[in-house]
Length: 478
Image 1 (cartoon, helix red, strand yellow):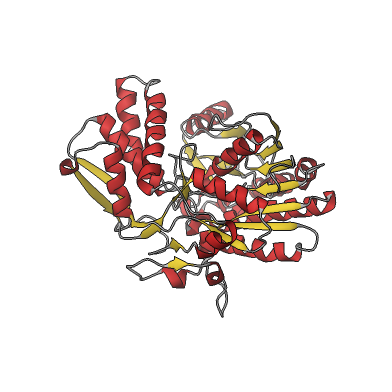
Image 2: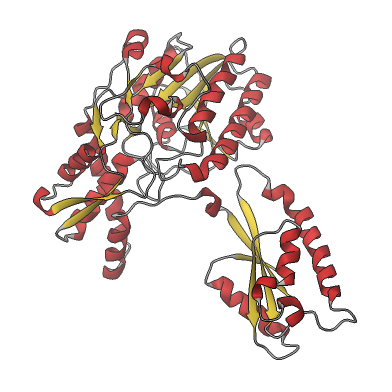
């Protein structure tokens, strides 16, 4: 992409971190930019003079809509995050959603005649076998991603990135491909709390929250033993590399990262200095039960220096300082909304990191179902009726439950009289026949509420269910 030739560019994930910074640069250069994002607005005030399309790239029709008349596509949208998000428990959701949206987008690009496509790949494509067990730097060059045997990248997140690199080669006759392998990009505007943030933001948040709390001594939480080695690339440097890659003729994967490797303990030391904490009153609380990733990873920049003449300008200390000032301001925005008790609670929460379970982020619909074996000639009638109900629920919800990128689920709450021994069994709730029927038909998420209400008090049963759900924040379907 020649910066003197103004281009119509689609940026997926343009309301996100890297995408948002790239959009700002491209619009400042005079390019016409369209943003495609599932979020209706940016978390950072960086967007200017861009068309905005809100939707889900897992929907092929949305992909066809957003690529119309576009010359270049920069694909940053992904289900991702730091180790709090891309751990093994989320593997299948991450792979399925990211692969589906990317294949949809590529097909739409091919059909619409898009000329150029940039893929945001990751350092996670590199084999874990190279990076485990080492206490020294592991310098990863682009050719290291392909070993002799089956690929062993970091989880299904890394495998999906590697698979799409292979898919892109199949499109190379019709699309001008660019592949950027990002190594831990950080800076202002990135995720800084909630479990999807990376180590620099997490440690800076904890350090500044401890500073604002004014409590001493301070235990700074670190996942793992802190000896893991990483390099981190500041966002401004990463954007410069992206623009150079677009302007180049390079179609091979390119590392975009820093060669300045540190341990996580050393990264925490920098965060402590940025927050101006008294180091004598800070100790590190290493948590061994949290996801930590590989032992050592560092970017080898020989190739990117040669083909793009690019090297990072920001030192890690400089980038951490800039990022820390932004995070401090974001924390203070949250605190100004709280009273004293809320402030204390927020500062305590900011000193801990979360593990994100993507399956639990699904919108849960609750189905409230009072059931009784009484009132018919044969108590088995209620189970036959329950089977018909279950089949109807499965049939009418399967399309929404299988819609990728939009996570929905439902939970059935059964209200059963405590003396309905036909349904509950002789004093053993494990023999609950109603639950067994639902589970046998493929509805595993069932909760029984055992009720002690007068006969015929159905409204009371609804109230019991509603009170239970009110404590859980579920959306109810009757």
